[in-house]
Amino acid sequence: MQKPRIRWHIAVFLAPAVLVYTAVMIFPLFNTLRLSLFSKVDQERVYVGLQNFQTLFGDPFWSEQFWNALGNNFWFFLIHMLVQNPIGIALAAILSHPRLRFAALYRSAIFIPTILSFVIVGFAWKLILSPIWGIAPGMLDAVGLKSLFAPWLGKEEYALTTLALISVWQFVGIPMMLIYAALLSIPEEVLEAGEIDGITGMSAFWKIKLPLILPSIGIISILTFVGNFNAFDLIYAAQGALAGPDFSTDILGTFMYRTFFGFQLQLGDPHMGSAIAGAMFAIILVGVCIYLFGIQTRMRRYQL
Amino acid sequence: MNQARTNPLNTAAMHGALILYTLIALFPVFVILINSFKTRKAIFREPLAMPDADSFSMIGYQTVMKQGDFFLYFQNSMIVTVASLFFVLLFGAMAAFALSEYRFKGNTLMGLYLALGIMIPIRIGTVAILEMMVATGLVNSLWALILVYTAQGLPLAVFILSEFMRQVSDDLKNAGRIDGLSEYTIFFKLVLPLVRPAMATVAVFNMIPIWNDLWFPLILAPAEETKTLTLGSQVFIGQFVTDWNAVLSALSMAILPVLVLYVIFSRQLIRGITSGAVK
Image (tube, rainbow over all chains, first blue to last red; front, side):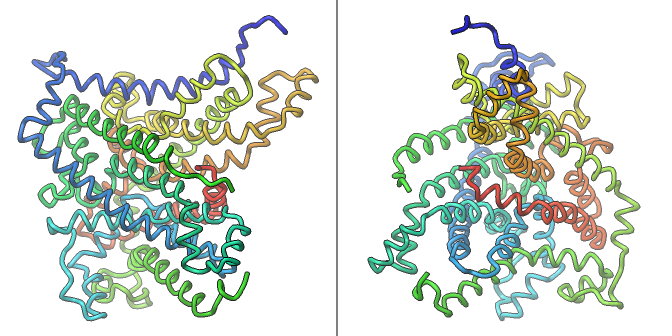
């Protein structure tokens, strides 16, 4: 064995990535958490301990907004879990069917909304659902359901659900693709063994395929969770920073943006913004930990 | 394959479901595109009709060309996306090579440290990122965006690329070492060409979120000369909200480049996702 010497090339290979990642991602992350413990008094930055969090959770003006945004965010997430993921799984199950013609074509077409920006998606749906333009009421009229039409994005009780469904429309391609990949990796012998036992069609899906793709469904759930809890763009593009009507579509991302950047009459407050970012960080961390330690380790993985 | 899994009724039902969903997925895009070529009257009278000789109009595109600097926005988006991808791939591949090739103290720890960013969104640190960019004078420059997107893309890039680099044969690298090649030459001349498919996958994964991001352009580079296409179209549409021709044309012009990129790269993207790169 050679005497250990400093292998400079390892440092050279690692340095750029570690430097950029540390300086632009990890350091600001902790710096933001640190800033949440400060406040601005007479143009000076002073340490105030947990006072910002006390304001955020204790002051009715702030806590009302925070719980509203958090509740909305959970509803947003719930709709994704209940609508986006089942549709994605169903589409993937159909697409993975052997000998289905045009499968690649369907797959590419259904994935198109996912590649569009939130700005395009937000405005496109805003126009389509607009009562002025009349595409949505016109189409409902064609099937005799015109009475169901309402300006969904403008009504407090429907706006958030509508936006969540628009987001589902945009992102259904991702669960579809991931589940499709998981389904393709199931070996043919397993399915044939099931067939010999008389398990075919739908029951083959429920009894054989679904248990085998559960780990992928777990990954999709946590990706959806993290994505939803730092979502911002769609709401901002469609409803603006005020997340109207009357904050009914406000989620944590828009709440944080308004707080730290300011809007209209309210001045931006980076320290309160940091406190909200800290709360978001905690929520995401809890979600990821529940997934990693509570779900992923308990999930049964089958050796294929 | 037996009869039970392919009866004609089932096949018809499957195609029916897929066609229905494909229509739902494409309908909004289709409506925006066709109406952008129509006169204002035609947009409102028959929103679902194709533009014909009577209703055809390019007035919206003319307004967009006159009022918005879409070529500049497009150029900015292009610079930011290409530069960020370049740095993500170069730095990511270098770090992945160091982690997968050499055994050194703290290797696993370094790998975990770099993987942290896969699950934690960089947006949480926005307040401090903005302060840092202001302090360094990078605010309202494309470099601010390039740095942020590079940092954002690195964790997943290192993770995916190091998986692939483990599969590169040791014999090949050792043969290079016996021939007296330096570690740098081995990396650039032997290993990089072999992981090109994985690099393409990483590039395609990163491309779409960077191109479409609204948050960081809005906060770090909102100046007129650094607006990206996403932010530019957002601001433009906000200002011209009552000019339907202009709004529809602006939307179409924002859709087109992504659609073209998608047509070029869709096979790579779909192969990347389905090859299990993100398992």
